[in-house]
Image 1: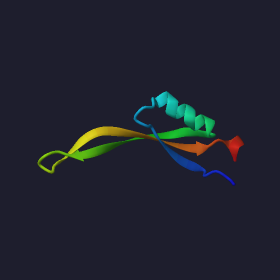
Image 2: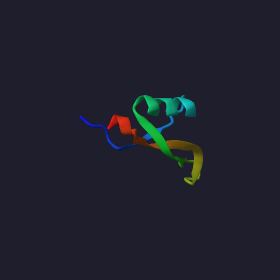
Image 3: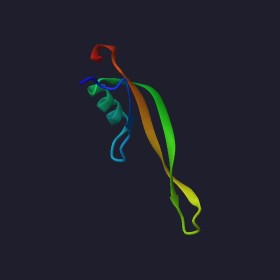
Image 4: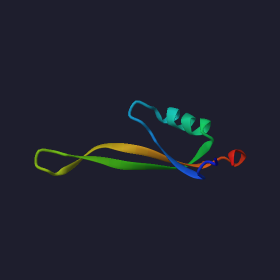
Length: 66
């Protein structure tokens, strides 16, 4: 079974950026893009408020892994 050419990796709450990048490397991907997505939550007045930023790396499969 072949791996997907592109895959997204989300930095988990208890994980550092370096840990996520290392996880990508062990799975055979290299980072090509970093995205930050806001995570919203509702406050008492039903208005969305930004809770935190979610960091997502997009990785492509290394040439020797294909």
